Image (cartoon, rainbow, N blue to C red; front, side, top):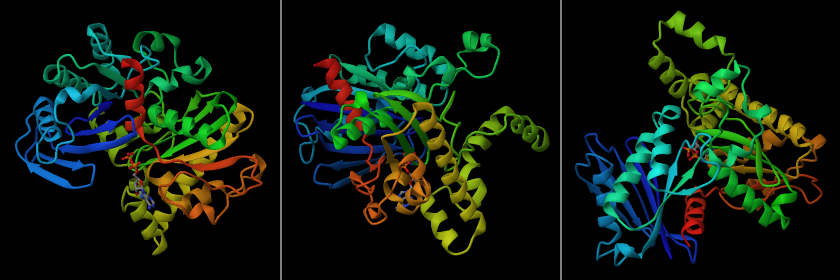
Amino acid sequence: MKILVLNCGSSSLKYQVIDMDTRNPIAKGLVERIGLQGSVLTHRTASGAKEVFKTEIKNHTKAIELVIKQLVAPEYGALKDLNEIHAVGHRVVHGGEKFSKSVVINASVMEALKDCIELAPLHNPPNIAGIKACQRMMPGIPQVAVFDTAFHQTMRPLSYIYGLPYEYYEKYGIRKYGFHGTSHKYVSQRAAVLLKKPLSELKLISCHLGNGASIAAIRGGKSMETSMGFTPLDGLMMGTRSGALDPAIVTYIMCREQFSVDQMNDFLNNKCGALGVSGISSDFRDIEVAAEQGSHRAQLALDIFEHDVRQFIGSYAAVMGGVDALIFTAGVGENAPGMRAGICKNMDFLGINLDLEKNQVRGEEVDVSKTNSRCRVLVIPTNEELMIALDTLELTK
Ligand code: ADP
């Protein structure tokens, strides 16, 4: 059984075909610069061979047409026929309060997705464009939507209501939604397998530390708290995003810099975070190098990030009344032993005891805590595509 997984951004499209018997991708690729000059499709086969196509790609329909062409190409295609695709799973960023789990897409789901555009004006329109293009190109093949927000719909009102007039929640849907849900769900399920315990009995803190970063408190398999909020700008300081701020800073900077609403939005999302503090890069590898070479601003950026993560761990352990395992995932979480060591330092009071030798791992699924550590520390590479494929299969079996 083969599932096509699609992740459509405003000018990009990532795809994978996953063989559900082995759970491995048999083809994957990326279309970049959709609707811009210099569009390019990079396709990889199961053996890792790379094919690059530079051609005009005006919109998502054209992009999907090209992807399908690669998938069935006689020389290296992963499929003989498109009908080998059992179903398509689409990553959808925002499902608002309407979707607490993945759904098979029909006309009423499409209407509900359109209603969520207001909440994610940059993300949901390309997601919808990808779904429509697939409906046109692959009639009869079921399409499933898997939401970044769905996993966090188990949060309680005391966690998701902000200190604003309640009518703003009712009128505009302003509340904490949380993101990276597919990743937090995947790694929490893997943690239960690694720990050989039922998920229903575990208190987990999942740290998805990538360019975008968020932390979730997961009790009994359900998200209780998460650091991102109404949008993915909230919580930890990130690569280019500010993370949580005193809200008064927003209007203050707008006045001082004469920023419009759009300029302020762009500033907070793209020019702040580790990039803004370090003045060097948003990439933690570059920042680590600069810090080693003596840049105090680069060191400060690393220190702030580490401190932010530690604060969330402490607070989420308090909310859950303890923690059985701490999970590190995504680019920094999976690949930066130094950052993991800094985060776990002096956390004996929570039963966290990192094994510094085991911790030297990158991108592998490993328990990196000492044998006597009461709280386990796990490195678990995330696999959002597989999670989307599993949900898609489950709903279309
Ligand atoms: P996203 O999916 O949010 O774009 P990723 O999960 O791919 O992000 O993470 C990207 C981040 O991971 C980058 O900041 C990158 O520097 C960091 N990263 C990747 N490898 C390493 C490494 N070996 N050491 C430190 N940071 C790393």
